[in-house]
Image (cartoon, rainbow, N blue to C red; front, side, top):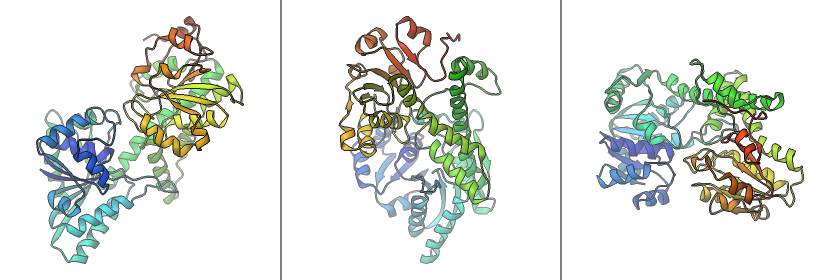
Length: 457
């Protein structure tokens, strides 16, 4: 099938590369000429395990191309995937300017019948706005063109996006009930047929329900995280090990273990933005989503927990103190620093007068960029970017762990203890066991782990 992907960001690039991997002829469009030049030169603008190999293989096979040519992109694909960004607006709602601009560009050039696929995360009712934008442009040209707008939200985890796309647990598709909608359904059914050979993975529904499903899924996952984070604060006060609690409740099949890890708060481009956008939609309909407001408030508070633990241990004035930080990206296997808890923790330490040495396996370049936005030049001068985890430890008063990279899970604790001025670890992801730290003579501050309890598997 001939497919056009509009947008070569996280969702668009993964979608385009993986659809090409399935044998489709994919044309990826982006208005960012520098990004397209990078892709055509063999570079990848994001860090995503396995993606570079998939892109290179399919470019070499002639199934994947990148361009800034809008007219050529519209002419190419019977399927037009809109996979552009939907950043939060000032009021928390999703900014649809790029989605609607993409729709207008399609409408200005299309002929015949095309299926327009909303792949971007968009609020309920977006398909209707896309339909109106397309119809307006077609009418302006008096063109012989018809279309159907389909909602096909993505459910990709950063750090495992290629695997998630190629082995999906579900494929949600919303389409209209009319003749064009049924025609679009058949096209989408053919597109996703390779994923349904063992069992049906497609969930068919109306367009609005599909749009809502994406937000509901992310809101539920964010709720689980904030629920455990809130309990972790109480656990610290009443002498409970939150990890033991996680094992205990996660063993209930009605609950499960996923997204029950207490930590330093969630970040990234999805959960914060989507929770806010769903709240904004609710307000437009005079609804108050009390749980989601609490989820967001708990998460913002949780990002401050590590900083408060440092202050409780070393005092409010951290002038002259130096700290090592392991992990900057909002989660492992990505260089994404959007809404990362590390930015909140680091700013807290710097504003209190401390200096820091930081390390992340892949996010160092992105960290340099965003920290230059977060901090003044004088403050940024007190941030040293380490060459390795151990390189950050010299003369540090304590080590803070903020991202749960695998490379941090089994360090040499004796070397850590020897390198630190004071053997103190603030573990924002509960990577280590308190009892083990006590054996090494390391003062340990986890999240909700005030009791030195060995958790049995």
